[in-house]
Amino acid sequence: MSIVEMLVAMYSVADISKILDKSEGRDRIIVSKGHAAAGTYSVMHEFQLMTEETLFTYHKLNSKLQGHVSHGVNYVEHSTGALGHGLSVGVGHAIFLKSKGLSSRVMVLCGDGEIQEGSIWEALMLAVTRNLNQLVLLVDVNSISSIKGTEEIIHTGNLRDRFLGFGLRVIDVDGHDAKAIQEAILTSGDDSNPLVILCKTIKGKGVAFAENQPIWHYRSLNDELFAEAMDGLK
Amino acid sequence: MRGAFLDKLFQQMEVDETIFFLTADMGINLVEKFEEKYPDRFLNVGIAEQNLIGVAAGLAESGMRPYVYTISNFLVHRCLEQIRNDIVIHNLPVVLIGTSTGYDNGPLGPTHHMLEDWGTISNLQGIKIYAPYNKKSAGSILEKTFGAKGPSYVRIAKGEGIPNTDGQMISNTNTKLVLTYGSGAKEGIKFATANNLDFLVIDELGIGSFKKLDESCSTYSEIIVIEDHFSNTGMYSYLTQWSNSRNLDIQIKSISPSGYSLNVGFEFSSFLQINIKE
View 1: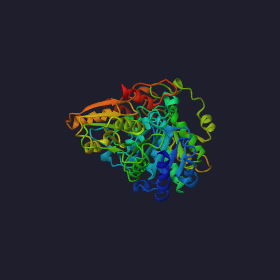
View 2: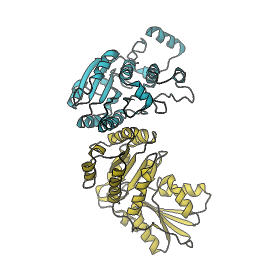
View 3: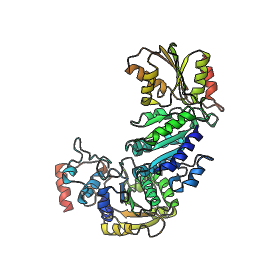
View 4: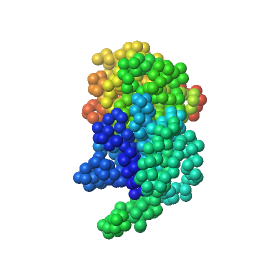
């Protein structure tokens, strides 16, 4: 739930017709926190990249819509699920676009727990070295990792300073303000550095019993809780 | 072999503008010309192998054909998850070039011994595995990768390999065969010749070797596998799988490393000589 507005902002900025054409110069969206599949597929449906019929097969036997984002689903760039992979792949796409003189963006969505993976920082160092200013990393700063609060597990300190120290341009936004995220994305390319957007979010936003509760990383809704959640979201 | 492989790849970059060469800061005196002539299709990602594989995946998804170069031990074990998830599951035409095999780096210690690399990779489904045995074989393997639709791992031993032949001596009368590859080939052939045995050096490993085994190995009553890799995931294992799947009655023997060596100066050739005599 914390990533819904981030996804909406990314797909709003992207030229959907080029994604539909799978053209070389399309904007790339890579959801590196692959467990956000339900949110990703719902937003793809809103942007005409998936039919409602397909969306409602989510998690059903033999459906392509599994619990982690999959390239078996049309218009998904890359399968993710093991954390720390998507940014490197996005860097590869950005290097290609730059070498071809194409101005499209590569937008990668990572979790704030995910950035504990060392490969994230390998990718960032290369992105800065190569001045990949078409690359936008959106970090879902919901402050919760897998089983605990992020800061309780690994001290990340001031994230802004960390990314600045690596040479990136950093913008802080309210991660539930899609318009603000969209405006931040549109500033990419303003200078030679890749852009990081730190999106401050609430895990389980809008569902009172799940908000900020790490256990809801793992639980599924029963009919009663589903009704309660939907009431809360209205 | 390594130089021959890279020289031919360098030539092909002129013909095929989708070839992209990547290294993780390895290949001194070998890779510089790639950067000089093709700066837009060359990338040194630094000492960051996980990123190396992910970047190659992104380039391949954009339509490029990445050739990824570094020492086998760093290439395979450090980034197995990236190879599995980002390359193999996506069936991308990425060619992983691992240099040094077996005990090529003997004096450098067990972190640099390559005794389970292709066995590890072969457990992934849909990646081809090659091991050239001389310059001719290296060139032929490289050509196979040009039009490949999926991923490959090319495991290149140090040195020139065996003399530039087709790597086999099949008599049609002998009942015993030495089967070998990579850095084991030179000693394997020496052993076969000294004992008047047939020999076969293969340059495609794993399941991909079965076609060659069908062509050349079915009639032997005994096959001795000499390899620079642990036998339980190496050619000994694949040969027994092959023999069993064809209901053949072949006695299969293994001469191969076991465990990790902590001795400075460990050399595969001396290891083989000792074990072959035993």
